Length: 139
Image (cartoon, rainbow, N blue to C red):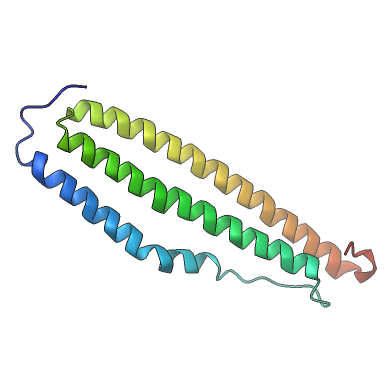
């Protein structure tokens, strides 16, 4: 890592822009997370506690993972870039660090989406089973 002596105004402006963006992301967090729990949750005719619990677990998982990926992940990434710029790290090095961090967050997001999809499929299967024959309950 080396200092880019041609940084000029970016040395002063970039950290402020990164922190402003981070503040906006964090401020919008509660609203964004509330939209995750607005998905319709159809129940079987007997309102099975097993199905209610499965929906609750899915909601909790989605909110925790989204908060971790978007809010904590973005805030830490933004802070790291701001510190790197303030310390005079070269633009090329910052770009490489950003690519690595972005790739890691993208892979984590893909894993999160896959796990959430599998959990949603299990809920759909449970709903189908409970709606088809109430005698097959496993509660």
